[in-house]
Image 1 (spheres, rainbow, N blue to C red):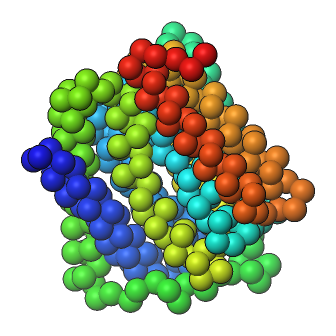
Image 2 (image 1 turned 120 degrees about the vertical axis):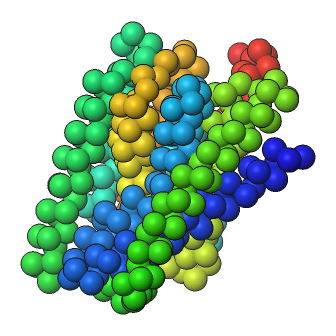
Length: 319
């Protein structure tokens, strides 16, 4: 019972820590006159990936490599199939043309790069982790330059929703948020390992299910609330951005710290991630939106995938 309580508390710390970090960092950026559009592209996007980052890095440092890479893959699968699928049930999920042509294919490319690295030698080493980080930096610079170009063209987004905090509260929010993320990450990994051992679950299964779903809760809750208010037009773009951050930033940091061994199942899961990304791209390509029927199909696919990985973990197979 204690392990479950620690797991829940860890997730709460991760989620609230990420919220406080984003609020504090965004307020600091605003005080420094950084445009809201760029804040959204950088600070907020990194904040939404903070839970995944904390869990994967903690797992990597502790030597729980299977959990580290599975958390990245599982979070991306959950974001695409469940977060987007649930949102589409409430309102058509619109995707901007630029996102459809640039970020979406880039998210697939990032997963392909990780797959290639993993397939070569069945591991992702320090050098490959650094390469992922370099690609991430290039992507970040590209996004910021695109944001600046959009602002100069008169399309700057409002930053009115950013909380105005005092200097002291900014420091407390940033430092406290980071502390909560780090502590929460350690609690989640420790308790998840305990639960896995107790039930005979593999680290891969725990990373693909418990950890990935828990660290993706902020995206799920926020997106569903937005969809219910008919404001889900940016949800798919945010999910795509988060998936890019997870593979390049989270995966890059974790493997740069500690080389991660890649199993055949990890490769299968990466191929699945690439396949569902391509499937969603096809669904939204013509009308630039994900409709209810497409959302239902994504949820059905996720349910089938959960059954598959659970059976796989017990040594059984559907095929």
